[in-house]
Image (cartoon, rainbow, N blue to C red):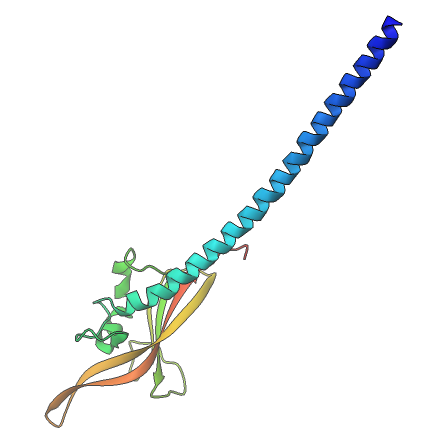
Length: 173
């Protein structure tokens, strides 16, 4: 009879041990699903922060003294400075650029084909290219001005341009 009670007691202890392990594994799986859900939210937040940084970088880039018009007009780029920076001079500024690539297109006056600067009658400036392949681009419209002298008067002759900044995106997206 003692052996029978011992055997029943051992069986109850084993059942309790298996239940404790099952409950532990259940909460472990719930914890893993929760962590996975939180991690997906972090990836989305990271992508959103990258987008916000790129959009805010557009006004920062347009306001840099290396590209901005002399009279400090917002979103105005000096065409002479663009020509200088598109001639591979921007490699000296590798740590300065907050994005992976910077391009400027002339939108108006209209053009028939894209001609990269520095060239005669060019309409496309490749300011900076970090050499990264997986990019997402964001853009804003800017004024592209050039100081000219006609009929004894010096004035700013402006056109419409498009400032394009590219940011690197993750491979998993």
